[in-house]
Image 1 (cartoon, rainbow, N blue to C red):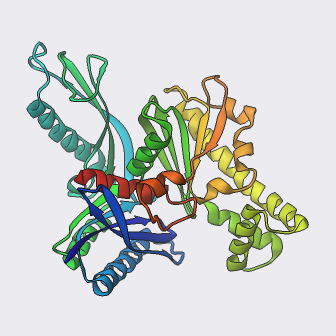
Image 2: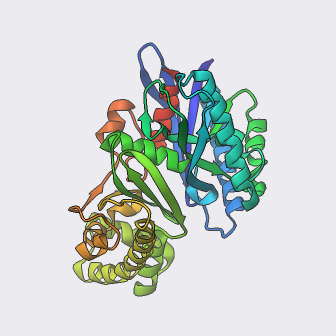
Image 3: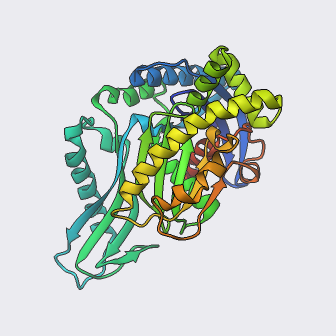
Amino acid sequence: METVSVAVDISRASVKAVAFSFDKNAKSAGLIDHQKLALPPTGDKLDGFLRALATLRVFIEGVIKEHRVRISDISVSVPSALLLSEVREFRFVRPSPETSLSDGELTGLWRLVRDQAAEALLPQGAAEDSYSIFIPEAERVTIDGYPLSGDRRGTGREIIISALVSAWSEDFAGVADGLRANFPSADISFAPEAVLISDYIHLRRGATVSGVVVDIGARDSTLLLFDHGVLEDLWALPFGGEDISKAIAKELSITLVDAEQKKRQWIRGSIDAPVAKRIGHAASRVTDFWKREWGSILASRAATAVVLPHVYLLGMGALLPGLAEALSELEWLESFSAGAAGDVSLLLPGDEEKEFFPGWPFEDSGDAVLFSLVSRMIHKRT
């Protein structure tokens, strides 16, 4: 039977999955099946995630039955809103600073990073096995202040490992085992959304990118701060594009479903000017709130870190008319930035996906996380 991989991007609003085969010799990916399904609103995050996994299970079972394939591996992107995530620095003093850092020593230090991360976050309610599910991701490794890259060798006394640490609460601890029980022969892994966004930013803007990334989903937004390619901090916030739809529904006295349709027409520029003006006024009240929240967070962080005024927009909300212009306002950028000239860019999926994966099935602006997840799965095999 043909072996197939499944990548799934779970947000609080939707499940987007793609099943694909990969020819290692030809280094090419082939589309097997795909699906995107909306999730009903729910205030309970665990219930929403369980619904998403149930949807994923039905999709995978359908792929197996219809295409007569074997599922080799499943990777699931977990939204930032469901995780405890932060960037931490872990410091270690070497007993033999005159010797070069070996692979074995680095492996041992990495175990200590996982232990210290668990100790630091467990009091906040993280599950004890979170760190076997979400392994910390190294952002920076230095010896005596000098960054290491490549084979990460060097001599010196103090090693600092900056890592993105993610975990989920006790209520989610059995979720991974439940999915593995459904597909026991598949290699199943979970990846924090922030890691996949970081990968995508590096792909599109290079390994030394600096600035602020704003990923605007339907019900959540994620703010990520980069400095010379290193993820310095991140914040998950409970608002997103659906807030715009609610504002439109109230302004036009229509249902939320109709408001969502109007919003999409507004984004495409296919709506009458008088209605577009009313929608714009309603949306601006929401985006003004977003700006205040994001600006307040970044201004606070600027007290301890350099924040460059380069803003990169991702997600469905990135296409909202006027948003890029609103975030380009000098007064707002100066509230947190380091004084350099500012700019706002949209990083939307495009030709990269089609070249990397011929037949890429999705065409909307919220594909970055899924594309990044597929890329990571393929690169793991090559």
